[in-house]
Length: 76
Image 1 (cartoon, helix red, strand yellow):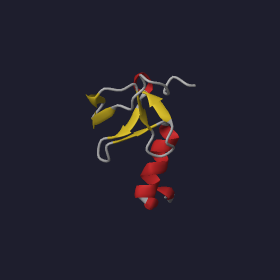
Image 2 (cartoon, one colour):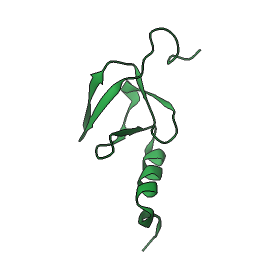
Image 3 (cartoon, one colour):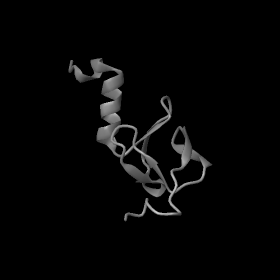
């Protein structure tokens, strides 16, 4: 069992702001919008304010940006 399982583990609800986030419903983690991976709140570093989504890492954030704007894949 990992630390996100068990009776006390809950997924938090978050409002993502510029450079910060606000917990609107208590919990110990959020799920990456791309990978589904659990992210402890104290390790959350990547999110989209516009889409209100968390990401596990920079690669997942970039993947979502490219999914939403395929032109980003083209090098000029």
